[in-house]
Image (cartoon, rainbow, N blue to C red):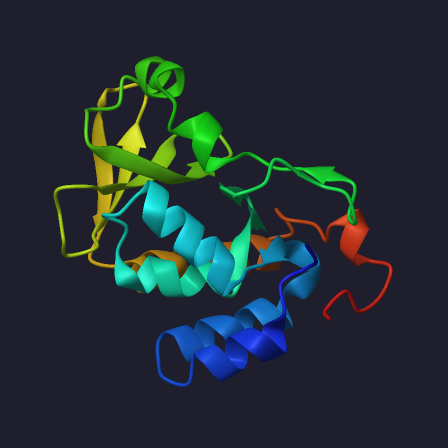
Length: 181
């Protein structure tokens, strides 16, 4: 694996809102640690979770998880030897034990985790691709976005605001220069 390839993502996304999201990820590269995705990752996860929205499967072709500012996107691999970093995986966060710990209703597939421990997921019965934030403490959904692109746009908007307020700092692993391949 390697770091998120902005050039590859820019070619994959030529229309809004994802085109703008990719540009903003490039602008704030030092504040996230995303991994490069692949067609193989998309195919592998579609086989395991056939109800994942097409929009998200397309994202997996350019991004296989990592740290999206202060939110963890799950990865297909738990460790990257090249980067010598560990990542949370779909397998770990979608296990029976994890779902029980979250008290997450049946039929939801976790794809990301908030820094404070709330899972972000898709509903396997919802073909529309809505994104759900499960509030572990209150045992209910606290936010719903119409699409993965809407969710990603809001994540980036929130991160830019936090960066402006000096609430997020650049990641040490990214300060060594251009990490894009």
